Image (cartoon, rainbow, N blue to C red):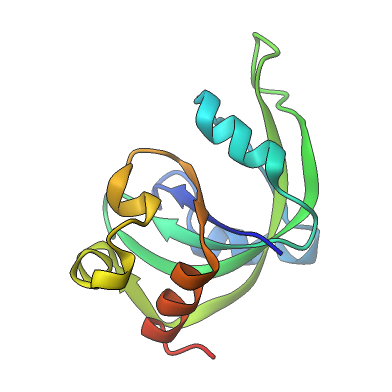
Length: 138
């Protein structure tokens, strides 16, 4: 299973809204970056990802699961981009802030640190384990 990070501005789509979507989940649309597109194309059903509140909060607040693999994004008039569907799995016990991530030497190569603007990012197994520990998760 691969791991990912999904960034969303809480004022646009929040963790609470993701949770409210329930088991049916929701599509992760609006990605218009080719590298992020490639990341989503690599996602498989069952992959897990961190749900990251960008801008206002700058923290990992929950865990989501990919429930539908890459397909065309109905909001893309060019037809070049796609999306995946995700559902909320659970909130993390302790949100992990960007500042905490940057202060953790084991996360110095994490995409969130190196390329923070990318809206969908890969997370290595080691990074996943470190962040889960920081979040009070097993």
